[in-house]
Length: 408
Image (cartoon, rainbow, N blue to C red):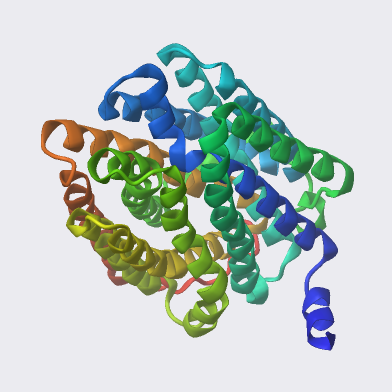
């Protein structure tokens, strides 16, 4: 009990509130996201490639949201963006029950894509504001554990609820986001003024945007992340439809496969974080990308449920290494008063990757074969490995993850 109390006191109370909000939000989203492609196919009776194009609108909205709204976390504060994103995310989930056409699904996917990265950007920027650099890897690892507890619970419960009613599932998911919206509005305090100085003017934000667009190292870094998420999206967006259509694996079984990802992260993230703490972060990202390639590509060889569970475990090892490392690296690399801007760019890479991935997978499925989804994604993933190796060789000083607390 004393150890628990001491560990609790190491971090501010607001950090634990953010973890709780992440858990509830991810659980609610997990009721829906693994099954949305299958739901759209059943509702609209359209091909997987068409579904993928609709989901791509989510990536386009993510791009615009991350690029134009994300930097506002450095201008008007983290809390406002966080609360707004949660509320409109809840509205998108609620309205999914009333979607009956390609147009309405497209609008809702765009709404989902526009709100999701803003919540992540605000939360991660708040953590960077609250936690000193030497504790950030542990803090972001805990944030990922909280998220993946929701990822583990969400698809399992969602698969059970969906077997009864999609409508009920959508309403419960929306209620989860509304709950976190209220908790955040009441209890979360703004963190921007704690370490980042005064709020920015529009002119200052434009100048900083110009500078980041000329940071070749950081743009290459974001490109590598984007490619990794192209691979990841095949599993987390298209796998449910692939398994159902080709092997008759139903929603509740897909939920168990997805839970492998979450349970592995919950049990191993701290252990892995302790092992990799002092290793060059770009080297870690290279290793993580290789595990992603193996995990995604090996889905083409599976035909039973346990095969896909093994592939998910291999992919998750890559995620254990790469995901908290990229977030910590970004928080340390960014000047203190520009964290929202830098986090928005990594969020943009995440969203665009998740949008382009299903398009690639859908086209490979319809034009080549279902198995081509996984082999094609693995080939694309090799580009990420090349980019991370290039960064480590060409920019060895920047690749070391040195903290840049002062503004440039």
